[in-house]
Length: 319
Image (cartoon, rainbow, N blue to C red; front, side, top):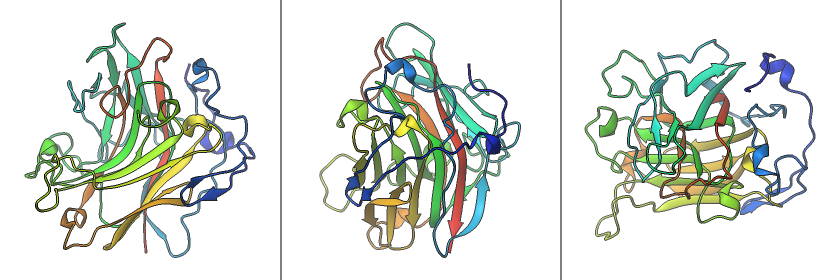
């Protein structure tokens, strides 16, 4: 079961949550909603009802948004990018149809499901939804949507459980995989949100990872997938990211990128044009759920499927 046909506005029933936050992480008093000791079978298959109280802050003006209120995904902006064997030893196939990414009751819904009982590559299906102009190969008529500087924010309820790797991120629109002329990571990658890290407690379900991937610095001997700049924060008291909707965002200007969770900064990276010129051009947005892979662990019999990511909105603000 997904959820009943009630309007988004009417579903925003008041709930009270108390949270005190500090820059290095979050500390506070969590409610009983979405705790790590919840039964694994309690993973939500319907969106939470915590109200949307997001404010962009002084000086920010809305330049563009998709509120996902239409009956179908706007295919002039969004493309379901099919990939049979994704990167990073991931176990899912990304399908290119509406069975895995669609709009419903004011949300974009991304669905990950098990299609074989084995935990091998191809045993799961999911979606990777991109806003690249020209779609999956750069040759379609899709106008897409790209971003250069400003505040890029999305209100999302994440799936959670062992082996899940949901993400909200961006790639330089010159990347070769979608028809550009520049290989990764020289094209630049901005990870606004990744969850499920195998380096974090509790399957990483309470930890947000943000990162920049870029061209290696001169004389650097590390692998090309250098992640020189990264940000990380973990919710307190075993609270889960997926227990309710949260706002994941970056503030991006000519000098730096700042990561925020629910309006609270948890990371910052310098991107001067002299050292990080790949972050001074257009990027497109990506939403996806990966299963397994190098970032996380493999799912097991305790990980129920299907799993869902609910995206309430994505917005671009400028000053």
